[in-house]
Length: 343
Length: 292
Image (cartoon, rainbow over all chains, first blue to last red):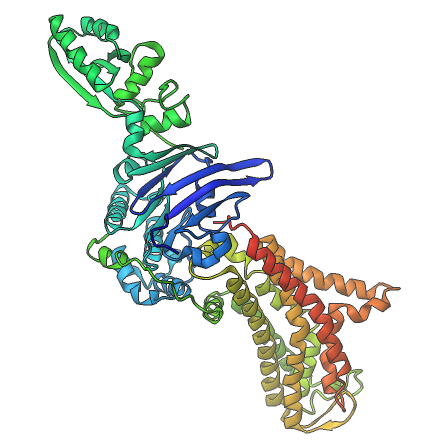
């Protein structure tokens, strides 16, 4: 088995529960070194997919391989070099944290028991190692889950909502820890509802909706495909808007809170700036902005599509792309001020 | 979280094949888990208290039941070794199957409900190993319950009425040391049908994923078989009912030893236990672990 095999490769993965199609022909490609975000609304099939990847549930159709091995065919061998947890990590509440890790290390073999002190230190639980897990807070259990994963010296770390239920400091610490693990060369498959976290950490993403992958690829590509938006402030925004709308190659032009917003290719923006100058309009600011992951997520999972923009739910402090999305609907960009909340 | 150790812990990604743990290792940890849980001691406490209560009751009432139908009941105050035999007669009917069901019905379902099954199944162990370790653990618990009960009854009986010879079911006098060996051998023979009960409990535990349902289902099976054995017209089925095997250890306490009921018990119980274990294994191997 080649070490160069993809950490995760899923093809046509389907999971059906009677009449409910939880996962509908999902393909995934996680490459070595990726910090791969796995996104989707509740019930989109993320956790079911991760459970299939870890061999916990049997796919109805399709195959998922970890480093070239199918958990359904290779059993525990498929999980060599793989660690993580789905949903909340679970431990034996009547055992101490150390005893829990000793148990898991015994089930790992390969000298994992020699790493217990080390991983407890990593997650800062050394002082509470002799306390029963039944008395642990949610955040401490999450950290113990990471410690249990690190025992296996993973090449692939699968984490399902690792920051859920953590306080802001805990979330920051978790983000930093994942970032450091990724820097060490560990491939990370991260399922999360924390879109800013994913945007900060991940280089590639898959977005699933109603059991199907609606996007898979580099995060930068997604944001680029979502449309390079521009925000323009001039000495006369009213006239500038008319010129922008008349300019070839410019789309979704509208007036935003602080000037004119529009979507265009870079060379068309150059032409536009010349046209504005020729009309005697001074450019105070012309700022390119990529769509945020939040905007794109909503467009993909709630709206009509990535390029459409319609139906998108602009977030707090909405980006140019969000304003453009609104402009695409009614010609007037009105970024919403409500806070983003993913259920 | 500290950063210093992260690299050291995580950087060395394993390239070779992991040396996987043996089923014995998993079994040892299953025993540790069992020992760490308070409810493990509920059943054991019950089967320790009953022999003690029996001996105290007999001492207080000073009964000399020489006219008793059972030969060991008639000898109760003549030899302490009659006590473990009487206790096995009494406990083997329902109490020991109940205690065995408490753990065998819980051994898989409890982990499923708590979500820890997914924790252990994402380590370097195969499902078959986990199932085998759990089944053997449940059987170990049943064996411990049986021998603990026998030991307590023997010690309490000897302390009260001495280490004397006893008469076997055939009326032959058996020396005290030989009787002691036979008492423990009889308990070992009783494990054959009890392991069949355990196997059924483990099957229900894997299938139902619900501890209460599995425990009640196992006990329900025992009660059902007792009912079936009492139905007129079904006398022909009785030798093949699991509950009928609960008393076949008595063949060991006859002179000469009557092996026929013991060998009969062995193959009848195998017909109950092996399909149950195999079905449980298959279910456990292919089932979805979605709990927790």
